[in-house]
Amino acid sequence: MNFWLMKSEPDVFSIDDLFKNKKSGWEGVRNYQARNFMRDQMNLGDLILFYHSSCDEPGIAGIAKVSKTKLVDPLQFEKSSEYYDPKSKEEDPRWIMVEVEFVEKFKNLVSLKKIKETKELSNMMVIQKGSRLSINPVDEKDFFLIKKMAL
Image 1: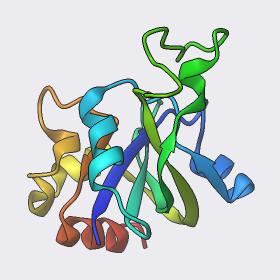
Image 2: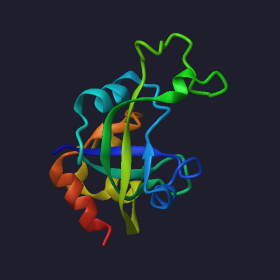
Image 3: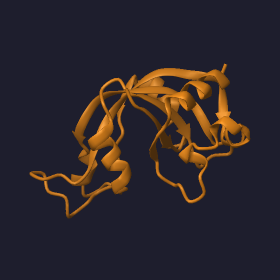
């Protein structure tokens, strides 16, 4: 099993939205490295730290899991979508996504500030300078420490 951190802006799609919908495709990713994580490394049942970004208090709001893999992102073919990619072809799609399923909303948000202050989490990609990826791998020990911090 792999562990991941996936970022979403809560005014676009939040942990509460995932709770309401139960499952959702993780569409709209237009970074090749993040796409490659979804395409090549994510597996059914992998656990995800659901991170709220670009908001007043960024941080980890809950847990999701990968419920489907290697799905074609339909937005790449919708001309009206901001994620439309005219170079992507239906017979050879450029953008792949996963479906995520709600697992748990944390009672307490684990803030970015708190993550930065926790010495044991100093290697997490989310706090590395210049790391702006919306999807990144997480060590198992870091995943469970974050979960413990949310209690």
